[in-house]
Image 1 (cartoon, rainbow, N blue to C red):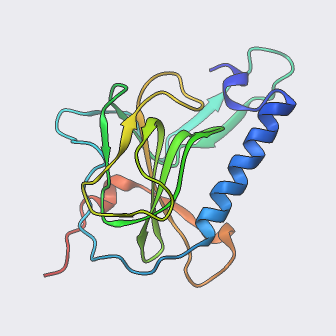
Image 2 (image 1 turned 90 degrees about the vertical axis):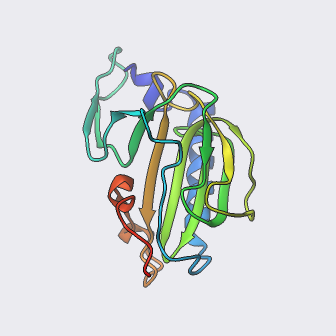
Image 3 (image 1 turned 60 degrees about the vertical axis):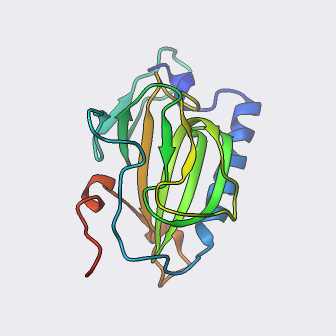
Length: 188
């Protein structure tokens, strides 16, 4: 992938990336408490959907110009190979803490507080149908998939962030594999 598709290359892009960082950081500082027992579903109908990139994959982006530095990172979610315009639904009930159509890296993104420190993050959406503060039921429409932000093609990136509820230090937060959480059942 071109270096310019990943790292901000000009002052306007750098400023946009900084603003996006502040929005995400502020959203992840809020806590909405427990929402429900966990019985998570996928953010799209998963039957027949393939994974274009799994959680934990290491990616190295090699620059095409001498002005860019190569970067390596670990993929913090699961990419689902769906075309633009696929319905994206809430995997669980929760409260929207960030809904932005144009974050620098993520493009259209929805951060949904599921309670107990878990936040569902859906990225690269072409349309967002919710706003911060909306209380969402499991299965409610969040918007449509797309190819926004820093991507090579249409797909849905789905991540789950665990926010350490015992600390204000967001550096202790971790990303979880959303597909592992799908296997949890609600207590009887």
